[in-house]
Image (cartoon, rainbow, N blue to C red):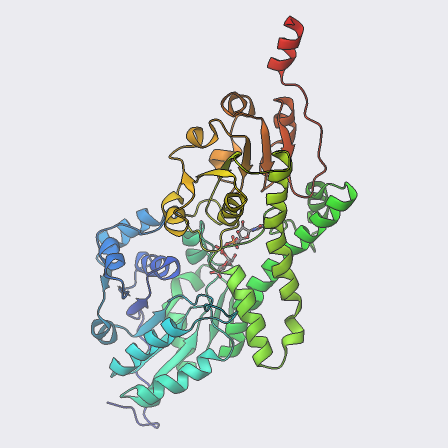
Length: 469
Ligand code: UGA
């Protein structure tokens, strides 16, 4: 049933029925939040276990606030889950595609096989006018290529339209970022597509969220440009940390002073072990790769340096642990605090913390990893490392403690109490998350990237021992 060009397109539903294809961090959060806003939503995934968990009210990953929202959405009767693309095609007025675009094995490019499969599966089945909305992070030009593909495959031809709506949510803040985003970006090719998107995001636009309406290549570019900027900002301050290390300057004071300049700002200017996760690292690599294909590789060649600075922080952290261990890591028990790529997440994809733990292990250290939420995921990736069930177990008898992910549980450790259970009071603060003075006062040797080494002070207990002696 295709519409004649002279026929008016079908009216825009006030509340379009939505499917969300791919129920990872992005898709699950999007599906759940849209249902809480009053839309009828069908979540779709090819992994049956994920669908079963979500349908039973269980979020299959750690994301603060999301389990409560899932409960609310399921109770409202507006959210259902399926593995059937037939059901999805029949149900949706709009289809959000939220599948992953990981880095290809052996290449910097993005792996688009899941994106292509999802668009293909929908296109073959949809037989009434509908809008496919890509949310996945993709190389520039993907929407144009997919438009051709889906219109060729679809029984309704060019009545099946495609738009791009990049997503900017951060893990750990996924609900907040979805319901109160800094901005919405609609990459569209027709007024009808724009109207469908406006209807789909009406409750979020009504609260005054800024909207940028543009073409699909610009929408695709916004996402990678934003993540590249954030990665560059982090690597910038980490490059300054390298300079600090050579000069005896202190990068934490430097970052503080720079951040007071409104034009620079203090967010994403936090030095330390650097960025990881399923987004920033692979996005800057895929962007460089795509720019080269487009003949503008020189324009983003600096991203290679951004990547290099970032990876050097991991090596330098290993250097600090080795220095504290007296130059040789063999047989030294190291407590690796944190495995997730950042706190409030159990995501260990390209996690700097786990990478450091792995390198310490390869140098012969006896590494005990503890993460409040990510132990299971980390164990799956690196089964050779030892994992502790608690902070106390991890630090007990440690020759060096390395803080690698700044969970609140680690930030609030008591240096005096901690000092009583370790074998040696030696700590590397890989995230500038600890109070240096408090650790020094408790008799610790404290080292952090980009900060001068300060001689440890005697702990009150040691001072007392000396008096007694
Ligand atoms: C990032 C972006 O911030 C989101 O806007 C985007 O939507 C998302 O990628 C995505 O592409 O899907 P996320 O990967 O959840 O979000 O994590 P961030 O909060 O950006 O942190 C990334 C890494 O940078 C972490 O490893 C964090 O520890 C590190 N970081 C962050 C620093 O080292 N210093 C900082 O000042 C800030």
